[in-house]
Image (cartoon, rainbow, N blue to C red; front, side, top):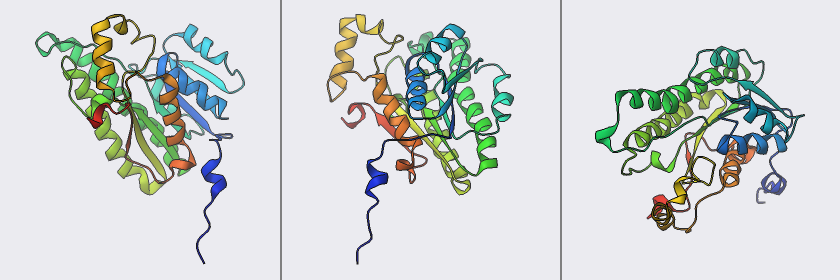
Length: 254
């Protein structure tokens, strides 16, 4: 007799009712899309950003399921606040930045800023979330990485450095927390159409270079990234940890 296949679990849409999620960088771009998607799937979501007007706009999409904290990931106040939560099932560490420059022009100040934002803040957010999840014996941490965490690129030496660090953190933390029932993964997008990247694509030469490097021939949408986050947070990804899901249209497959 063959073992049955649980078709219902394979074909059901993600349902996060009764779960609590927290998304840093939740006011704009990728983070905003993740907040809205998780809330639509039933989670009670805490969106974190420095700008209250952005957070109020996000909350307006689902007031019943979206709360927000006006906090800065570079400040200390956020982390004890996370650790004080009674429940946290999903963390999406999405706050981040970039400043493309040739290596010869990068200042110490820029190095410190980007390492703090893209590495230290992701590390501290994951650390604080893990403290809550360890008490529960369950949880899913999803770090927003980049295709640049898997390759190199001109004028993005510092950014690549930070995203390779996020990939290393994800692997190590995935191994460390797996015995306690906590999964840790990353999502690694290519260039996505967001308010931050849109001005870059006004340069026709740059846009053509990007599209020529993406095997599918076009930049991604925020929904592409949010869908990957929903999958990794869901029971459908129950056997996935320490992994990086590339949403790159084939850029890194060349």
